[in-house]
Image (cartoon, rainbow, N blue to C red):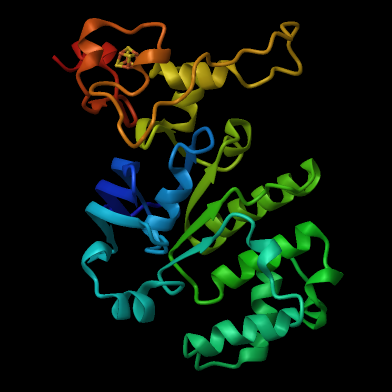
Amino acid sequence: MQHQSSPKLQVSGLQAYYLTERGSLKAVDGINFEIQQGQSLGVVGESACGKSTLGAALMRSLQYPGKIVGGNVVLTGIQLTKLADSRFNSEVRWKKIAMVFQGAMNALDPVFTVESQLREILKQHGYQGDIRSKIAESLKAVGLDESVSKRYPHELSGGMKQRVVIAMALLMEPQVLIADEPTTALDVLVQSQIIALLKKLQIEKGISVILITHDLALVAQVAEVISIMYAGQLVEIGSAKEIYKNPKHPYTQALIAAVPKLRSEDKKINFIPGAPPSLIDPKEGCRFYPRCPHAMESCRKDPPEFKTETGYVRCWLYQESQT
Ligand code: SF4
């Protein structure tokens, strides 16, 4: 696959906090990554690690008390974090970057047909072409027959609803698609079909896909680059091959060890002892420190991002490799 030299999406030092009465909850705290055209990036982590907040922050869809408090997001040269709301809504949202929100398939309006709901989006965004053929083309792109447009949401299976939601996100032909847990509540067979669809759209349309999930096994099927998120920070980024074969961060290692190995003799279930820290008042230093089997005195200082073969790792164990 040909990638452009400049990244499609570049995120640096992004911070998104929830301003609560008890203090700022640092759900996204200094995130750095970039994604090229036609590339897929998986964002993997336990629930409440901040990965959905990251997706919503990229879409500028955070609801109060959520707020972007720092950092930069640049999409094809446009500084999204500095853009006025009106310009972001008219020029960027859904047109350049779109998102399939978690549980979106359950938010389809039950009283309108698929066609009405797709038509409404096209009208809202001032689509000038032939609406009927655009709807047929969008449904076809996600593997649905045109006749589905006449149905109501309750007449669709879970997999079909999720395809409709993906078709909605792609209506205005965005360059970046964020999919937040797009296979939750679907059976295993349909999960694979939805993941295959995302891969197909990425390859055929050259869309950059950000897949947010807690499922490390699932992300391996679609993402070329995997980022591991823990307590509001990305602790490791690398090629999917590198992350699986040679995980560096102790949290990544523990996460991979916790994936059940159905075909192996070893049926032991591994888990990570302890719990993630409070994000309202995280202690100084590495946030994995209380759970890490390799913790050292130096880990009381916040680790910087040390370069690896295909990305970076935030862990003092790799300080030596940079000198
Ligand atoms: Fe463990 Fe220290 Fe690395 Fe944190 S910085 S993951 S505590 S070794």
